[in-house]
Image (cartoon, rainbow, N blue to C red):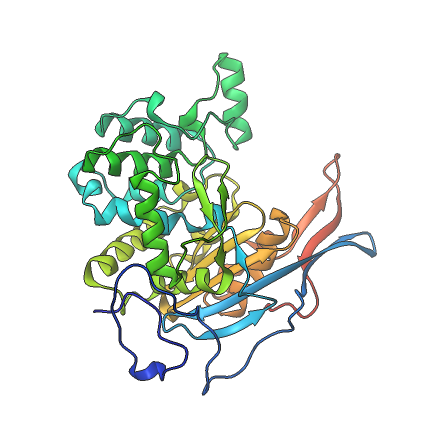
Length: 377
């Protein structure tokens, strides 16, 4: 295994091989000769509609693509060349240095911690207790965490904090698992902990290099901003994000150490779906129904990714207006079109494909559903 960048789109992919350093400027995956052209229109299609009574009250547009590990675009909708901020949808990529550096094993951490590093969790007791024990094992304190305090996403947990008169902490932050991974890697490598969220800190620069290698992009000069948890988020073409997910699904062309790392990450991601989200979350519900057939991770502003190991493909989606309600329905429909789950498995999570719209009294008054023409089967 000696390839750490995508095939050159100008070459015959069936015989391409490569190598090279971390900084390269290969084009990201695109449709190639010998494959069906499933490209959609350049304009972002309407993928989700919201009904109330007999009227479609609102709708949402999206860009999306399905890419395989060879860099072939199998299907695309809208402009997948323009950069998007992937936000929390690529936490699996950000967890790679935790494994590759040896930090995970050095502190005796396992699959649960690795899954939590890939999570956007609810802040439920199982999540926060695991973060606390992880921090203690790595010699970290609450003050080391620079992600900020957050009221837990889980309503029952948030209400319990209020009843006890306790304030939320950084351990309740939905990204505290990811930040535990950052801090643990820095501790293991003898790097300063303070400022680990900064763009120029070794932790973030190491992750930037990993993202370049996994997406096949030269990210020097790429647009970037500050994410909700204070780390940098870098603009990456949607097609390249899907390509990185495909390389998790099928790491055959990755260097051995990288292939081993992403295989461990995928295994932890699959084994502990509750840790990835928690009660009532889309990611947890879909993965529990899928039984390992699909790995999913949502991000803020309507970004979603999926990994389908058996087919060796990755999916990336961006809802143009950033709506989470649309991301979930659109991503579920797109995953269904791959037939990675059986129809019986989908019956366990019907509300993921068509979400009921309820009023304040709990009465169903409409639904959030895939738009006509958006893939469902």
